[in-house]
Length: 498
Ligand code: NAD
Image 1 (cartoon, rainbow, N blue to C red):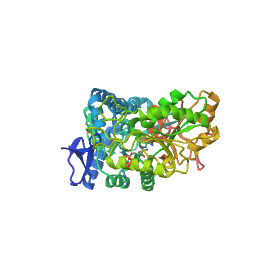
Image 2 (image 1 turned 90 degrees about the vertical axis):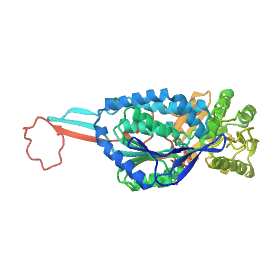
Image 3 (image 1 turned 180 degrees about the vertical axis):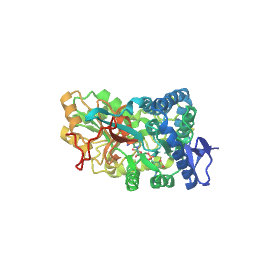
Image 4 (image 1 turned 60 degrees about the horizontal axis):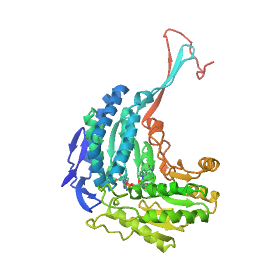
């Protein structure tokens, strides 16, 4: 059986803990690989390798660093099919979606290819007599990233692309549930010409994360995962003097106005609600039709579509979505469906008893659809992270607007309407970080920034785009007087540009 170790100083390292996690094939329920959990020894080695590699990498000019990113992109494209299959087999998302996961990561690598331009500073000639003022962006040093299971290609690439292109050395701690693709990405970066030690991957769980949060050599930590852990990482990292960005969970609403194109809205709901078995932080998990007539018409169209969802093993290209990532997670999602029923919501489509012939031990759950969900119910308040869609009926626009705005999470939201005034008002007033108009999963492209509001993100700077360059660099501002030999005399007051 395959065993994943760590990737330190450009080499595969087996690890010494003797402790391993299971990597399942979620379609069959079988353990297909083991992943070594790190000890302090490997972590210290990773940090030492990164610290040693940093000065030389930071001194490489930005254009050469960009060339490594160009090559990295080529290599990922070369290996796309192989990577997508590995991703699909460890995560359980279907192949086309696995390719989408890689492609969205590649878009950040394409952004990082522009790093010479992105790192340009400001310059003011003649800010004072013979004085020029300028600023530059310098890398932080050794930085770390901790990633979730649900985008094992995209989210590591979000982090390593910008961080490394900016001249930092990086330690990645991927999810222990599907470490295969992150490990493969590290090998590809080495092949692309990245010097050994600039990127290190350590596998593990809480011990690995805590060690990174404590280490004085780690200057910044980027985290993506559930809210409870994001909050913990943010607090502990910040208390240890680190720059931290920590993205958390979500409960994304989609508002359907009475004038919406209902067929378009239903297509959007099945794709964004059930794609990847709902295991996306930007999945739509709450549909909010406005008015009883809209709600009845929506349900009439939506229910048969949810009943007709095709679910199967992840490499079967004819299915809509595959299994959940683990049996433990599938059971948790199922227990939320039980809870919804006991709290009085109407379960219109019940996917709990789905069994697939030949895959009886796979972690499958059929699509579930609830109607008449109310804001006090657990299935409305909690992030379920499975193929479960809740319909909350709103009597009017103001109620619909207030639902996502008052929810503790504020990652994504969408509105479907044909009315520009309504859309504009919604975009302006909703208390959520990423908004879609007639667009269900508003994940911005890599040259914008990605980040939710409220308890969906902790820290000031987002992932992706210009924010990621700011996160992985610090600004140095220089005031320079040339030529020398000009005597201004001693000035005992604070210098001003008179
Ligand atoms: P998770 O929080 O369980 O794990 C994320 C990372 O934290 C993993 O690397 C894990 O090993 C580590 N970790 C787990 N428990 C820890 C602990 N007690 N102490 C320290 N580290 C710990 O999340 P997950 O289940 O892998 O991913 C799903 C979650 O991620 C969902 O809540 C989803 O909404 C969220 N997510 C958010 C975004 C976003 O950008 N907002 C994107 C993707 C996923």
